[in-house]
Length: 328
Image (cartoon, rainbow, N blue to C red; front, side, top):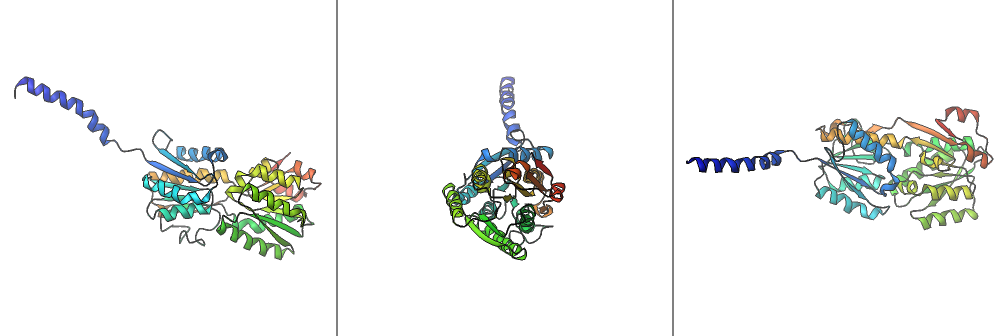
């Protein structure tokens, strides 16, 4: 080979090397984030989710991509959004915003790992067979909504001793969680000598209609079932409940923070940090079977003392002593 030809070959190789090297770099992994709500309702939760990823070695836009799919409270859209994420070959799916999202993700794939937030025991729901060692592609955190219903009603009775008739607000579009809540609420109410009135709402119009019925049959107090839709409408709900001067208990502190009376339930923000950690561990190669379902241990009682005074309620000292936060 003449010297000029040799230099020509070398020049071509020099141009080609960066292309080959670039092609050999591993592709950035992608997380699919599927939620039934809209992003503006999850600002704090998204922040701690990303923090969980960061604490475990992943930074969005740096070494991991997150593809978000929001159903905007239209649950009928969730199955197609889940299928779209699977078609994009994401490495893991975050199923957030209610049990219908978890079930839709599981229906979309039997192989892609799913990290979900469960409202109740996922074994009883048939999502997995073991909390300690999930055998399929689903793991996550149980925030114990169904398991806490009896305790929440007991706290409501403690704050409002005269309660004999309690209304329970549920979302019929979330049937699995609604059925569990009503079953446990009826059992707990019966043991405390209370009667249950069921209010159903799955839209803004139905929320207004449900509260309009209270004019004819007014309960002594109200229990608001934990539902992602209700969480996204918490200001509307709290305003209606305050207008009707109904003592109410909620499952998330989000409600007392905007003027609700009292909440008792899992620290939902911490749950999002946990699913961020689990997603990162899966990206690092941990198998779903080695990631046990976490049972939420951070339960918090939050009381809005200002609203209690507005309703003419005296908070028992024993209840104040157990409160994790009292909003003045």
